[in-house]
Image 1: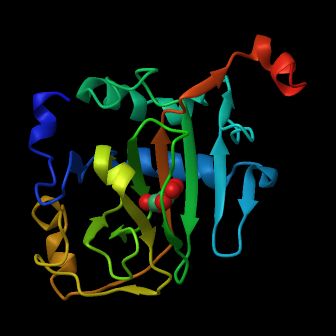
Image 2: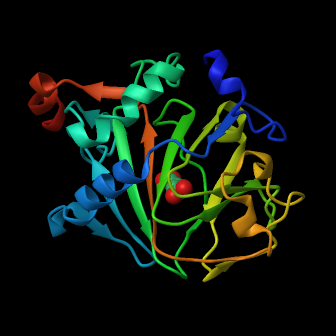
Length: 230
Ligand SMILES: O=C(O)CCC(=O)C(=O)O
């Protein structure tokens, strides 16, 4: 990680984590939202509590990615900025090769979970549209140990033991509450602290782009052999 990132460190987290409030501009946010919301309907996977897009494609049963480039709008400017900051520099492919786009409407969330061994242990999340709180849990605990407020246009990077040892989730609520310097670990790094001084924030539709490096990649030339199990 390069020196600029040091200023963005979330110091109270147990391992390397960074929060950059102004990662994409308002114009870039609008362009990304337009690409996501105008994607053909079959691009969306509808789950009971949210919907998501998987780029370039879902992993196979053996957690393998069939090699294929990400679309240009997911690469520029975001992956270029990761490179400039040294994010993913230590990952096996030196850059993310997989992006999940999750949409959360008010009241929607994602149960505490871990992302598992298919990926290099680093997730870079760009938030669009509205703020939301990400909760980090010790395994087996019902209450979150850390809470991260992700503003729209922000980047959150979580790595190492935060990835491997903690669960992460988003509460199914219409209002994020108990927002304060004591309960939100990136409070000092927020762009619009004033907006949250009241201690709560009504949910609006928030979209996240989670960038990861899938460890196992099958070249398309080998894909037929791979799919036929030989
Ligand atoms: O939307 C987020 O910030 C979290 C998404 C998430 O937990 C995941 O993609 O595994």
